[in-house]
Image 1 (cartoon, one colour):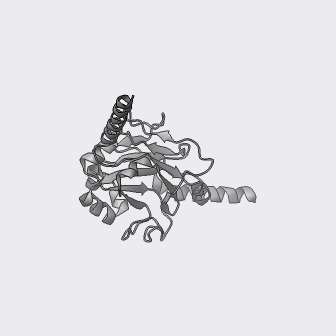
Image 2: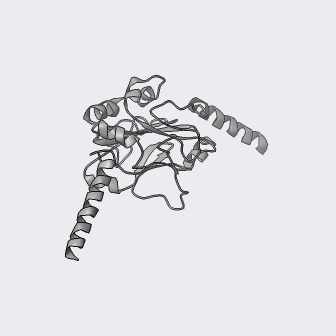
Image 3: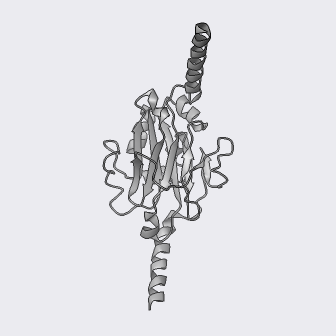
Length: 233
């Protein structure tokens, strides 16, 4: 019986080690859930099209991402974004359910191949005036000068045991300690189809057409305000 128990422990440890190695090689991995704040509705009257890049970066890529202009990063044909090995989660009016990049997604294999040591979240979104120039308090790394960008270290192997939560707000991106209460289940970025639970706007390493141009958000919100004013007369 002792021999059977010993063999069982060896098998369990071997399986655990194998699971860890399969989880993006030697780079720690985790589930990443992203939420869009309902404050967008009150701020802009609509939910704008928002792209969220999740990037596992090594020291060289991290230095480039930390100092890049976020607007330039999301511009058409940007070389840094093309080289980042990103996974992209997309939100828009009518598509605001939380999105998840699972720890088993193929993007983590890319992050591991690149010897990633930091997890970056970069957001293509309209930004409140002044917010882009000031770092979000608390969880942004030192030197980050755009609230649409946040980085989290891979400090230990235990990193992969946790889900990381991020909320996109009109003033930028914040890391959350826990899942928001009463939040609906997240749509998972599918490993084979790059599809979030049947939603069409999701991709890994490819550009995604915007459902509602970011530049149109303020025009729509102003138009909505004018219409409301007319109805009140």
